[in-house]
Image 1 (cartoon, rainbow, N blue to C red):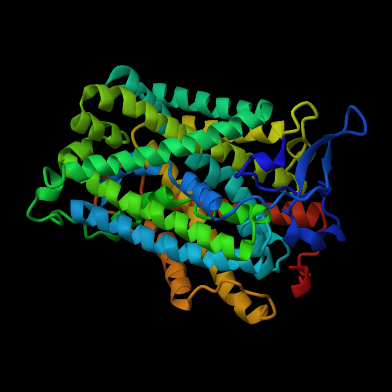
Image 2: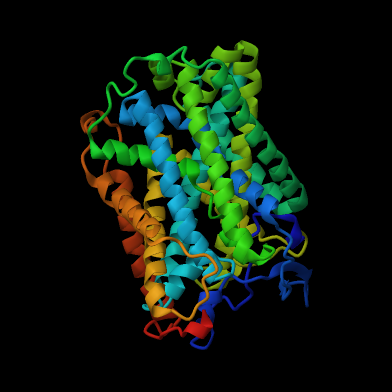
Length: 520
């Protein structure tokens, strides 16, 4: 696969699958600027070339990458769920604004991290630099969380939404089709994405670029239609905050979904080695792309409430955008054309996510974090792609598509995958603050304002604590409210135990060893 063809390519490092005492000193740079190459010394071997990636991404291409990574199923599917949580039109819009502000704060913190540690790898590199002891612990747990929880749950949710909108286009009914039909399509969608990335990688990359354009134009159409219908429905009410919830858990649930919709602004942190002048391009592209997307998101929610009443949005489930266009533009557009476009948009997110998730599997295997790491870290000689890592990614997504109980599966997937994300996001920003004292000698081309870091940490603490607070409608919930956070906590605890077994007992990592500043 040509490494210059993918804006989502997370560069991969070549190293032995088992970590020795000598090789462990290089853990903090475990994902560096190397690309796949189809070289083999024998029919049974796979060899990766020691070749740096081309710095080809500028400001505008970087902004396009960020926007394309953020815009997915969330803005087309979660507004009804968020309204159900917070209870009113006004508070729904406020929550989206809060999500934008907190995401911008988090983005600013990640920009300091990305310019201070200008290497691909994202949170893994940041956590290992900020918290070097116990050796490789946070990097190991983060990789497991990304592979087994964060990536597959979010992609499963997107895949199910793709199926939901395709069935909407076929039947003309937003909610009457079978849940299992949605899931079956979701499984097929993820399988198609994995096969394309495994066998026709260049075609998959071109498809991702085209679908990004579709997503941006679709959001712009939502905003335009809403502005033309302003004041005709929910926003015409005398009190847009009537019915607002006062339960903290309701807001945590709503914010999980909002932040799910905003996730993706760190996409460039995984490809710093491909940026031209990364110290300037990274913060400008990421903050600019997120800001433009946030404006479109808030205006899109205003548009939904300008066209649809509260009851209609509440009953629309995950097809609110389709119902919106049906009322505004008629049955042909709303029930046939637009649902297909939304399905294509969410399909694009699944395609991007499957690619990135498989690279995390591949990199974790190369670092010796996974069982059977030679398998997951191998490269196909025929296609020059990590076929087994792609297969593992598809299998994990399929598990999350099939297993959750019907009815609340989409919301549950978002909450389960979101909890570990907030744990590691908060730790990354805490690490940023810590490194201002422990690593004063590191250059910081971009420096986040301290109150911005405080907001990011406070948001992470809120999102980790409040899910344990009993919501007002706890008795009527099919899935207990504590399932998502408890699942996240248990997973992290088990991962710590697995780290000790795999890295200390089996691979004999010197987990007490310090990392010096010149190794970062």
